[in-house]
Image (cartoon, helix red, strand yellow):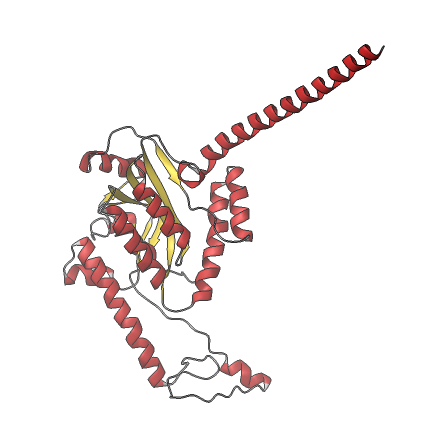
Amino acid sequence: MAADAEFLIDRRRLRRKLTLWRMLGIGAAIIAVGAVGYRARVGEGRFFPATEKQIARISIGGFIAGSESTRKLIERVGKADSVEGVVISISSPGGTTTGSEELYRNLRALSAKKPMVAFVDGTAASGAYITAIAADHIVARETALVGSIGVLFQYPDVSGLLDKVGVKVESVKSSPLKAEPSGFSPTSPEARAALSSIVLDTYGWFKGLVAERRGMDESQLSAVADGRVFSGRQSLPLKLVDELGGERQAVAWLEKERKVPANLPVKDWKPKAEGGFKLWSALGIGADLLGLDGLASRLRAVEDEAAGAAQGGLLAVWRPAP
């Protein structure tokens, strides 16, 4: 009887161990399948090292502000041996001048390492056009919006409202132009002139960049640098873009002009989420997993725009009137 009891106890222990290992095996299989699916969903360059020879697609959308995660993404693409060429897919109204400048510099550094082409999928206006001219070739859809070469500085004047509610804001300043414009009082001519000099100086920088990268003379530049946007069809003869078409034409240019091997897959490379919990980033990752690419891009754009608004300063952005 004692031997039978010990035998039954051993059998039960063995069954428990087998059940545990089966559960662990099933869990590992689920994780592996999920990882493969997530890799396909979010792109190879985000959480997994890319090994397959490919063309990397970097999407620039929403409001452009300084982004450490985007800078690191561009660096990863530049170091990846698997990446034979890069498509910068753009659909953005622009952003801050400093954010646009930073992105331009980072992309120019990438173009020194990898063949790169810009594809205007929707809008490449103002700061987003600065992004486009970082590439040596720009392809735009016929109905895309391109241009808006200009700079603005916006601020509210709530002095009239404060007068109506009986509120007066006083200040003691070291000099008349300190903290101007304040928004609590009408802007003085001297403060307006100081702001205008900054805007015009940055506008000159923007125009010089366009003239250099697009090979424009003064008359060609003046025809496109008045702040307006142009359709893709209008942009071609104005030298704002090089070709009309879609991503297929952008890839074909890489193959023909930069000798990128033909028939390579185009893979999305996306920034890694960094820092603590961020609501919009978390929602964006959730939308990625559900296959809602458009919603994911918009959610991330909300976060970027909020960050840009917090920075303040000069803007290189196209904002059509409502």
